[in-house]
Amino acid sequence: MNIQGQGHSLYQELQSLASQARSVPSELAIPAIPEQNSSQADFSAMLKGALDKVNGLQGESRQLSTAVEMGDPKVSLAQAMIAGQKASLAFEATVQVRTKLVEAYKEIMSMPV
Image 1 (cartoon, rainbow, N blue to C red):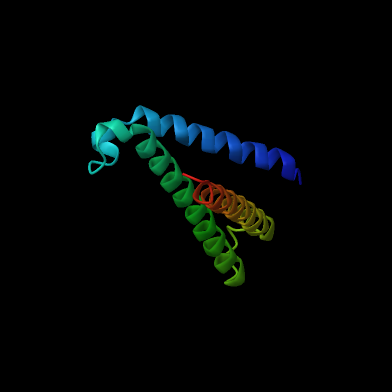
Image 2 (image 1 turned 90 degrees about the vertical axis):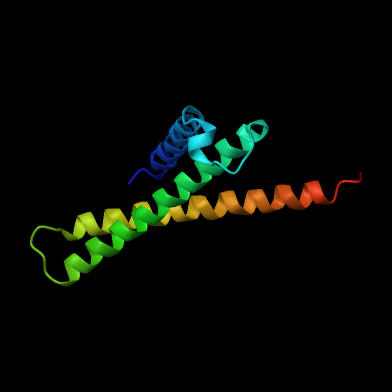
C-alpha cells in the first residue's frame, strides 16, 4: 500500500474541492457572507466539502465492514479493509489540518497589536 501516493491524492482532492468552491457564485454557496469576504466563503466551502468527504469515507467504511460481518458475498474483506484505511488516512489528515489551524490561530492571537 502506497501511503505517500494516497496522501498526494488527498491533497489533489482538496485542491480540486478548493477550485470547485471558487467556481460557485458566493451568493449561492454561503448567502450570509458579504461579497468582500469571498476568500472566507471559498475557505469555508472547501473545508465543509473536505469534512463531508471524510464523513462519507467513514460511512462507506462502516457499511462495508457491516456487510462483511453479515456475510454479504458481494463485499470482500479486502474492499472493507481498503475502505477502512482510506477513512483512517482521511481522518488523520483532517486532524493534522485542524492542529495546524489551531496553532496558527494561537500564534496570531499572541501577536502584539
